[in-house]
Amino acid sequence: MRVWVDADSCPKNVRDLLIRAAGKRKLSMVFVADRPVALPETRNIEFRLVETGVNRADGEIAGDARAGDLVITRDIPLAARLVKAGVRAIDDRGFVFSEKNIGDRLSMRNLMYGLREAGIQAERAKPAGRQDLKAFADALDREITRLLKAKSC
Image (cartoon, rainbow, N blue to C red):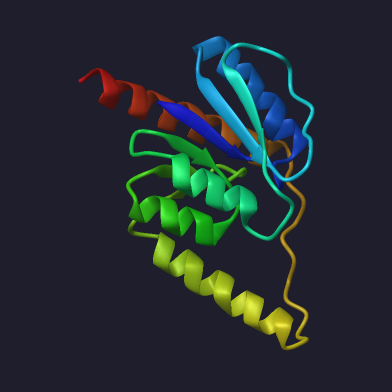
């Protein structure tokens, strides 16, 4: 099992939590971004720098993540690709993407994108707070436990 992180948009507090989890649970973790990201030099954490460009990191993750892996991303189109391929995905606020909810999430994302493109100012998400970080930590722990248990069966 590997944990993939869409590091282009991953907040620092979430990144720090992921690094601690990788050390504590001895997880193989890959951070992917099109710009350098400060990470500790440890055996189980890898950083992949991709070419600058729209969806370059997403393409790298979607191309290499496999069923049994976990991806951390707030990118809903990427999450949709992953879910379709049998890869678990959660966002940085602890929302677990699934076959049951990804269609609704993708539709809402596309609607909001269309409104912004038409010049209509859509409501912005509020900044993440302590409760969001806790929700993420709880979801991360649940998903890692679920995937490790499935792997050992």
